[in-house]
Structures are given as structure tokens and as C-alpha cells.
Length: 244
Length: 244
Image (cartoon, rainbow over all chains, first blue to last red; front, top):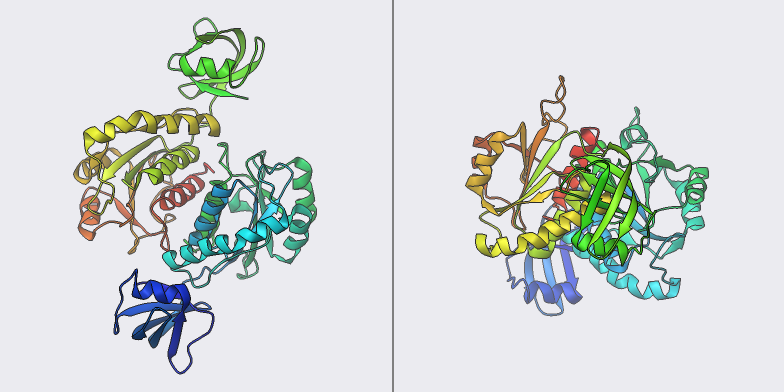
């Protein structure tokens, strides 16, 4: 069933979809009055029936609501900026795998080094990739792609997380050993996953992140590409926390 | 250190590299006599020093040898044929993650439906993608991309494996429950992982695979793209078997 996200919850069991999505429902999907679709708002799915349809607005009546399938953990991916098409792939895959936020980080060995202002112009497009992936994969929220930050800002940021993990090809502990699953449950809900760019991290960048609480994670002997590493690490984390 | 694969082991501590690789060492890598590189043959890495160099042949002396880092399991990916660029990405990522063989399978819902002969023309190119990924990720073998087969052939094929797993979006057991790690160790060394194309599998295709011993695996609530699912499943399998 087609899936759409809205910014506001239903009012008196009525939801209005406007803009591109409205056109998409009528034109690309060729849906008609009475057809069903799923509208998601803030982790709740509403199964709806189309009451009226035009290029500008589709009005829906909610038939039932249920909790959307979101992971029990809130994983933020801090991704050292790779080349543009790789970053787009990482956004798409991270969304499928359940990340709640994707934060591009400028590290020393990044080949792609966009200025903050220049990067902001791309944000709309990048957030649209997250939106489309969220629709396709059945997420309960649309992960946010944020402004680009530097590594000092990243280090400050991870103080707010229950658990911060940085993947380092030169060695570290296994994801099984990093304390993902606490005995009491729920403690390590907010997880920061930090992944290097094409060139990886310098040792002193790892030391900086460690001084702010990050743990070094090792993903094994084989060298993963920078766009493969977040997919691999997130898959394992989601599995170990019972979310995959 | 640059990494190359050769078909024959060293003879009297001498290895010869010819063809494209020889040109690559001299021209693209600009290596010189005395420089070091790694040559891999059949799961053994040889650290070598360049003795002579020309466009046609590079002659190397082995300085030391060591076991290459191959996973303890032999995972074959049976991948229902996705669109071409996605299959190339799957080959690259599967190689990084440690697959030993990649077998394209024609299933009912495949959108891309190459004829066997037509597909064979692409095999050189696809195997080259595996070779480049094996070099880059530090594999001890180059995974083979095989001819395309149909689902009946796939079902016959999986009889030879210790454990066969088919990912099905409509439900199944978790990768933790499928018997990856046997108590005695080593029993489930040969693993077949079967992944659907863009449209997934029909129920009767799953039943066919099950009748040949495959177990249904469920990768969770979120719908993964067909090129994300093998990366996610392989990462978790490699982790659970102590290979990542």
C-alpha cells in the first residue's frame, strides 16, 4: 500500500495531503476515491480511504491507526563526508536500516570538503532521499539529514548519547562487546555511530572521540568501503538489539 | 600496500605478474625496483619486492608469506537478478564482506531477465568488479561470479550446503536462531544465502527452496531494498560466526 508522511496528525479523523504528494497520488499512482493508503505521522500509521482527490489536495478519512515499526534504539549516524553519490547511498541505506538522524562530518581525510553554506543548498535534496527511502522501507519517521559539522562539533555532540561507537580499521572491540545490550534494558537507547570517509580516521581523531566517550569498534580483517561500513555496522547493531 | 592476485604460486621464491596488472604497477602506481607489494595466491599473501619492471611483466621476489584473512565460513550468495547497476553493487559489497561465490538467479519477479548467452557476455566485466573489490578489501581469494541459473537449478544447488537461508519479507526466523553456530564447530561451514530481487519471492518459490532444505529468514519490519538485504544479512552472518 502506498505510504505518505504528514506533518500534522488527523483532525476529526480527516487528513489532508497537499503538494507533490497530492499530485503523485492522483497522477503517478492513479489512485481514485475509495482507494486505501497509509499515512504516517510521528510513529503512528493511519490506514486511510481517499474521500476527494485533485492535483492540489487529497482528502483522506482514517479507518484505523497503529504504531509504526520503529527500532527500539535511536541510532544517529555521524558519517565523515564521502563523495556525493556515496553519501546519497548511505542516506538511503541508513534510512532503510532504521537510523533516526544522519549527520555529515568533515574530518581530516575527507576528499569531498563542501563549505557549510554550499552544503546547505544540497540539504533539501538529501532530505528528499531520506523521505523517499522512509516511504519505501515503511519507517515511522523520516530521518533528518543535518548540516555538516566538523569533528570537534561531533565530539561535543556525542556527549548526549548513551553509547558512542567509532569504527576504526586499525582495531577495536567487537560490536558484541561494546555494551549495546545493558542488563537493565533501555539504558543504551541513544546510540551514536561514527564512520570514517574514504581515507579513514587519523589516530588523533580517534583519540579525540575517545576522550568524549566513544568506543573503538573493529569490523574485522577485510577493509570495507566507507559506504559499506555504515550499512554493515548498522545491520549488526540492529540485529544485536533485536531490531532486525 | 598494493595488492594483486596471481594464478600460480611462487616458483623458487619468484613471482611474475603480467598483463594489465604489470602495466598498472609501472604506470598507474609508478612503482620502482625495490618497492614492496602484496601478491595473493589461494589464501596466502606473499610480501614481495620488485626485481624488474616493464609494461609486460613485473618480476618479484617473495620476502615473506602469511595466511590471508579469509572468513571461517564459505558463504555463497544466490542473488535473484536485480537491475544491472544494483547487481554490480551487490558483487562489490559481497566481496568486501567475504562471500566466496555470487550466483545470479532468475526468479519469477525479476524485472531484469537476461538470457543465459546474453548474460555470459557480461561475466568478464562482473568478475572484474569482484577482482577489484577483492584487491581493495584484502581478500585471500577472488569470489567467482557464475552463470545465471533458474530457481530450480538454485534449489538443486543448495543441497550441497551445510545451511541454506532464504530471506523473506513476509516472515521467518532470526539469523540468531537459524543454526549458524553449531556446538561442535565447523559443521555449518558452507552457507547458502538466497536473496530476492526488487519484487521479492512468490510464496511457492519459498516453498520450493524449503523443500530442498532452505530456512526462511526474516530481516525485520523495515523493507530493505534488494541490494541492501544481502549486505545486511551477510554482515550479520559474518558477525555471528566471528568473522566481523
